[in-house]
Image 1: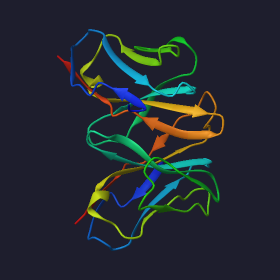
Image 2: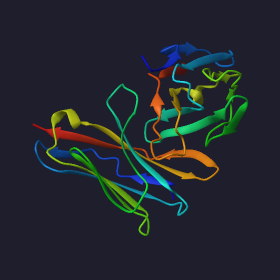
Image 3: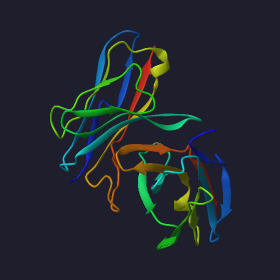
Amino acid sequence: QKEVEQNSGPLSVPEGAIASLNCTYSDRGSQSFFWYRQYSGKSPELIMSIYSNGDKEDGRFTAQLNKASQYVSLLIRDSQPSDSATYLCAVKRNFGNEKLTFGTGTRLTIIP
Amino acid sequence: EAQVTQNPRYLITVTGKKLTVTCSQNMNHEYMSWYRQDPGLGLRQIYYSMNVEVTDKGDVPEGYKVSRKEKRNFPLILESPSPNQTSLYFCASSSLFGSTNEKLFFGSGTQLSVL
């Protein structure tokens, strides 16, 4: 079982719709969760971090965390063509273990 | 401008010829890390460093060496490169690792081909 699993996609969403990206992780000791966006040929950039169960909103982005189900998701509202990218889920244990583990990423395409 | 600088951007070499990929950050970050990115495998951590003279292995350290003699620099060394080390490499740094404001800043990447 992979430590961090994501559906590789591609995920196609019409412009203006909600894009839903999912991630599951295997380590129950994980404490920190991140979503990075990577455009083709570019380096990853952080878009959201979440540490507590529930929802965290930042503009059109909402991260959702459920530690009991070992599940973290990212919702993108009012999807724009500029949101087309690969989205990487990353998980960290903290407390002396600074290893950050990434999923393989989900490729998202917003269709105009 | 705050940035992580990697060099070179592209590198083609032959099996067994030692090489170094440099990484430098100008943000006074304590934490630095190296990743390789391969299709279908995602980003995998090679080594990381919590501060000067403090380094630790990530998930795929075999065949790589690192050093952290200065806070700003974290070079990646391949003593005897092999074709399976052909990959896209990223260096990253963070000043607030372990806090709720932590964020990795990535370099532009180094595309390495080992023939």
